[in-house]
Length: 278
Ligand code: ATR
Image 1 (tube, rainbow, N blue to C red):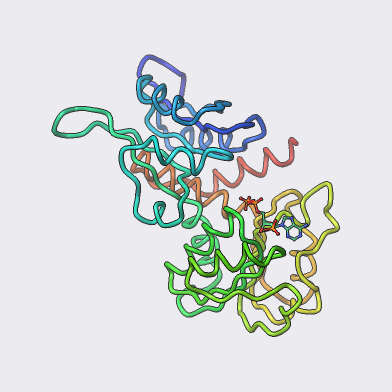
Image 2: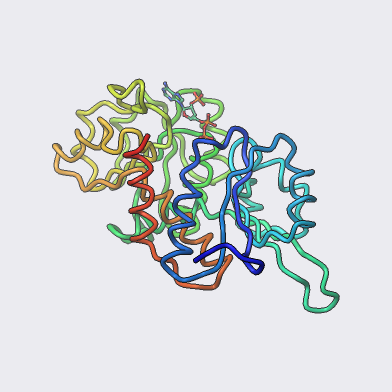
């Protein structure tokens, strides 16, 4: 659909943001659904000033990525309750208040829903036991999502204090990396960058432990088949690659912004094309 005077504006703010695959994913979704919208990458250093500008310019929906996911929260009018609990916003919706016509900015977190939807393709989350490796921003979103869905979560992390902090805020257990053989879980989720290019030979867990899990998800997507996923598949586990969470968190954003059912297959294909091009 050609850009014209009525084209709706969407985008992503981050720093840096040039490598983002979200423009390809969302523009493909607009094209597939016939929505007159355009999604661009905006490299910004100050999240607050960016939100003011986006509000004034009439943007409809904006993704927020590193390093602004926490800082942006002070600059929005409303925050979705789960995003508040996670302490990070990755999605902004700009809408006009029905009473006074003023633009309202509402912040959401779709990362946790992305992880849940990816996992829910393969497993019923309620009651599942899930070991999450890592305690950074991604682990926090994944962990909160799992708890929200009724899963029983165990956190493990290289830096014990950080892992224990996250476990405490999730109300779940922490296990040190050298005691992972003691953990009984159905699902393993790696949220650390271990195994990412240029260190693609990295493994975030002892491969001897992999046969214990029925499902293994990696959020690393470069390479798409990480060593973890390769070894997990060889050990008989089902696997979910790192594009799944990205695709589904984008799909939830698309639904929030447009109200239209997201074309998830189109969005995944766009991500795969981006990966192949890099
Ligand atoms: P993000 O916000 O993307 O999750 P992050 O906040 O940098 O990124 O968190 C990265 C996570 O991966 C952390 O849990 C980190 O462990 P530490 O808390 O000990 O730093 C973990 N991580 C990063 N590199 C790692 C490595 N080589 N081995 C094990 N864990 C690693």
